[in-house]
Amino acid sequence: MIFTVAIDGPAAAGKGTIARAVADRFGFAHLDTGLLYRAVGAKAGDPVAAARGLTEADLGRGDLRTLAAGQAASRVAVIPEVRAALLDFQRRFARRQGGAVLDGRDIGTVICPEAEVKLYVTASPEVRAHRRWLEVGGDEAQVLAEVIERDKRDARRATAPLRPAADALLLDTTELTIEAAVHKAIAAIEQRIGQGRA
Ligand code: C5P
Image 1 (cartoon, rainbow, N blue to C red):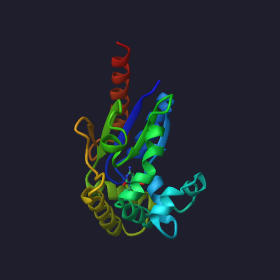
Image 2 (cartoon, rainbow, N blue to C red):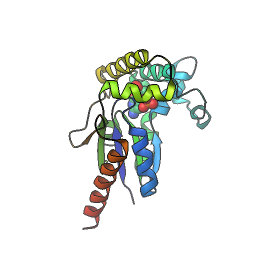
Image 3 (cartoon, rainbow, N blue to C red):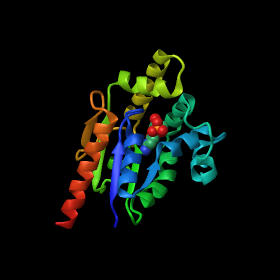
Image 4 (tube, rainbow, N blue to C red):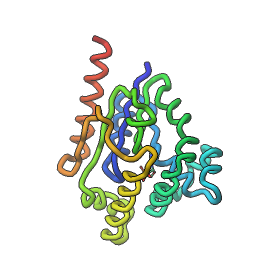
């Protein structure tokens, strides 16, 4: 079975948690596409060459989850040649046999516009910054400033900017708990699988 779940949205909205829960529930493979950009941003030298030569080992680095790695990722993510170099791998992953869930910024709009289910997960910048601060610590105001800066860069870039696909289901987790958002995501996927069988 080929079945793609595309999950997009801004930083720290809960995409990863929802993606992992969906992958577990349906036995789908999961790709955190942010990790690809983080790995490119963390490599020294020319980012285009880094994207073209990305390996499994690059994705296993221990320092990819930091705020600084997120900023570096969003800086290399504006470069069209970097995005182009990562495209085929993501597309093949999305359409692999057995089902796939990918989370990122442009999955439903660019990587897999034909995805069977598209979700756009968001929340207020304050709520997202608070969640990220609980993970990384430090100064919460600084975390908020970084979240806002990264959102702006991701939404304003010319190539594959952050935006919801026209046919995405919007999940705003400002008021919704992540558990409730997971529940809604699973319900939407079950409904779509049911349609496929009808
Ligand atoms: O999701 P995560 O915070 O790990 O993403 C890091 C950065 O990578 C984002 O701020 C964004 O600039 C970039 N990214 C992207 N397209 C994706 C996933 C991530 O441009 N599909």
